[in-house]
Image 1 (tube, helix red, strand yellow):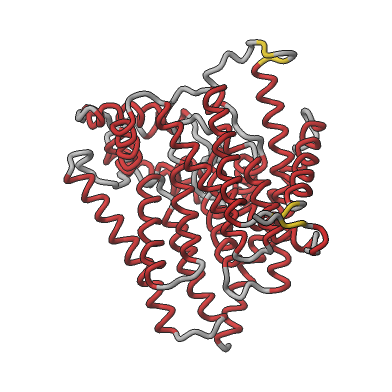
Image 2: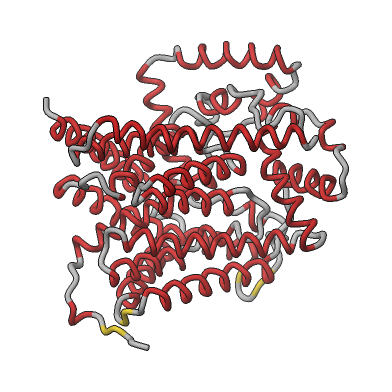
Length: 475
């Protein structure tokens, strides 16, 4: 098998997997779309379609479009922050309290087992402490930074779309992502997702033209993102595979391709090691950025009874044990749960897909601090959150329907090893890893920019560009 055919085979397998995963997600969404409030889901999809239609009627210069997208996302996020507010809970409260201590120069948080078991969370604590030190105490500075990172990600979606779509289609899909409701439900939440998503997609943008400086910078950004939220192992693997398959498709010399992979991976590991060393040396955490309970996510993810979600029974059974005993017990639990057999494991994987990708957004994180029975106009807060979640689902379904078409168009026409192939590998890797680790709907936040970018390809195939459909404004 020659080099090009081998690359085409790898590309085809990735795209077929993406088609299968995307099709299953869309099916699971559609089976849950009708009830309750099915009319609201339909209204959300219709509104999304209107945004796509209007979004390209006037074609803006790139700089103007970027400024508009940034301001739009920033304004909506700020509106949610000031109108709804938020209170950190669970892990977010633990990290925020630690950041407050660290900003005061205290390290009492290290007495908590949490920061031994999951020392890698110290990276985000350090970021929060820096913001609190620079801009003062309270949640508001951190929430405003959330809005800035969200606005930056919206701009990156547009810039990435420009790499493989005409400007009108890129503008349409970036505008649709800018009004996609789900990220705003977390705008006031002190989650590490906002910053991490920005860093990871900035790394993807640098990888589009993989020169030596860009590869080194991308590796460093992946390491920074991983210090904030531990996802980069999957993303680094996807990027390395992308470089290898792209090299085969473009008949590059094997040595050049391997050197690029080594530059990216080597920079990532070096920068992450330096960050971990810095956390240790500064006294923020003697464990650095390590994960001392690596099996916990797998224990949860392989639990048949909870469909791979967090559950109290596992928490009480394993995390109440001393650290070494807990690790050994969890390894045995993982082995036992993997021995359930292929049929039961496959059934669990399908159910987990439904929990993470097919379910509505879980509104507790952003709205749980509000009185659910309080009246707000004709509805209660609880009813309003249901309406918001159902409207969001309409936009979500349209995005996945267009993404399915987008993956099919890439399979038909080929990606030539470009950005579409990287997005496909990221999509497949992220989806696949959540078939074996813990799931919750909040975790899909990271992947949604890639889904909307794939949706842009689907939009382009269904709605080919015609110059008469758009009028460019000149300044």
